[in-house]
Image (cartoon, rainbow, N blue to C red):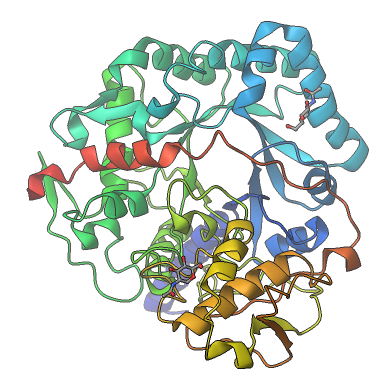
Length: 496
Ligand SMILES: *[C@@H]1O[C@H](CO)[C@@H](O)[C@H](O)[C@H]1NC(C)=O
Ligand SMILES: *[C@@H]1O[C@H](CO)[C@@H](O)[C@H](O)[C@H]1NC(C)=O
């Protein structure tokens, strides 16, 4: 090998090594608020086939935790906010939670649980002070319970927080600090986590920054060169640093907040617990925009790229794996479309995962018969089914019909057909679910047109039923308003 070759050889080894180590840490959120969830064993296969080896659950879902057993995938198990008060009240309650929801799965199923996420964005401004007093004691009790169970070295605690726990008075990252009303609490929690050699976790949403404000500079929401158009954002200049995207600016606001309060941001382990882009339900939620954002994000993950103020890359959990058709739409219709995969595990848009690997779809999903419910052709002339469609949409997911969404261009008859079909699918093609005052008609011809897909639901009865139906949330959705407000406060004011 010549000198030149040796040089390239070494570079290749370095790059390969880098790629391997970082692709080793592909992580995502697995939310299960779906009417027809993909069976957990198929989801676990989907994760593995795509090289995801870390997954975050929002609660201790038995089906998911069992299916993840001996899968080689590391798990973060969430504790919903409504359990915080109980876990804060006594160590015994925390011990029971750890026994039932952690120890049991590790010993019986070989589930590789590595983190317990105590609460989900508990200090969101919109929650007022509801969880402000219970979160820290719950965290301490869960940690004590893990120690008592002999698991504290393997299983680390953390608290996923919304980015509105920090802010910047002048909009520049260097002025970042924790929100004044919870500053002391935040410092205590960060110190406790650092002392327990545990990570801190924050959720960052550039989509919401863009979506909340018509004046937000669009390019600034994306990573420069992140697939598709070249990044052309006018940088935000903060001292010697020029910020080209809101993710970096937001993250570095956190870094400043940590440093301002005496922490060395490079020594504290930081996880980005949620970040992603939805594909439908809003003008800014398109597959092309989601692809551009997520490809930019993945490129950074693969490269192990940090931010200007913190060179160490955070661990990043992409939000989200699959679409969830029963999530609350209070934050917006996009809320049901965050998946990099559709509801059934099919690929929405290509994503390169490093090492030349592309997303691959779920295998083995079983569907209902290839039948759709549409507005009867006879009815179409006189009655466009509006009232029946309205009814169908109260019970099924019509978030793709809104302005700027994938089915927004349908004429009124096709629009009604879409609504009929969504109801018919949700009801598992049950007898009587395609009647609609005799306006409904079952067809074997796929009514999909253009970007508007008329789905066939998953046949959950043909899959082994491993899990109980999803709980309706309720608590987690108010967050979006505040998240957007917080992200907006960071780094865009200079554009006005
Ligand atoms: C285990 O987690 C589930 C799901 O969050 C919860 O309903 C249950 O109460 C937990 N078990 C204990 C003993 O707290
Ligand atoms: C489509 O149907 C839904 C549900 O009835 C309705 O809210 C919406 O206005 C309709 N859109 C059009 C273009 O007809």
